[in-house]
Length: 456
Image (cartoon, rainbow, N blue to C red; front, side, top):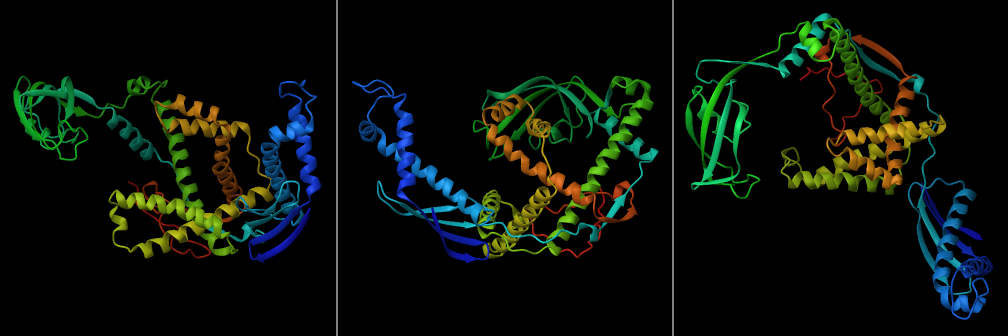
């Protein structure tokens, strides 16, 4: 095999490769002999079919397969010989080949850049620290109690915030329609659970009352049968209920599977620590990415940036079609420039973190991949079985989960090396930044300041 360098500009490389005829013909004959052991051709015993017959029957298909194998092996040899790390799949262009002759083709590719030595110990990040106080636990338990209210009957007209237990039958032009009937339905007035105007017409109703509610379905309502039409509901009110937060006591704790209230409080404390630790880490990760982007400069493979930009831009176009108002005040050229900047940031950080993983020999275990699959499944309640079956039938897609795992491990490794300026922060001031990875980032200083925002 002969390799000739045609071009070398930055990360772009182009080579001409010539594979001699003997190599191709020898492998082709070997493949045909192997095939001849199993094929059944009238007049010949398996394994004794003449080469000429095999060549006539299977020569073209076997040769095409051999050419693919030869090219793949040659590209691999080029990468090894020239010590290249291809960033994407090389582009192959067959320039000359005739049956029985030598093969000449070109290999165009982009390679990963050489990265400088990492000095993460020189980075300093502002880190927020916190304490979980008794009042924080009280507030968390009160939120739990508010999500599981107790209902008591009231002998008074229904008001906003009350729950009414009702039967209703909906009709359009005197005919009942699908989905418009229910019994003993509990509806909180003011929750906007029903279409506009329905709940308001039940304010002032008492237990035992019957009301006729008239409403118009929105023109864009999902059900074509009722969209844009006037409907009339006969509503029977059975009860008017007032909701109150559950009383937090020993029974409250036991009803939720805890031995006592003290055990519930300890569990809540541990969970709060876990949640706010995650908030702090996410903020540190974003600040770290700003620092890495600022301090480490290297050439990026244009093809990788283009692929990333196309993926982002497709989502931007979808958002525009769906009426995303945040995109309306900028021209397409402005949006392209901003989101190309995001694509470059993602590619840059991806290459950097992958290199951290490589130099540190970060390993990903089967258990970690299994947990990642389970986490994916948990994001689709009710469809867990289908998700598991998908990954079982497509084991190569499990490999797609390696990237995010590697990134998190590399981030943890870096965060374990950097220095910190710790600042005690109240829980209500701890909130994740609302900056999205799909929005342009402000350029960070070498030591970014923590952004403080009120929670919720």
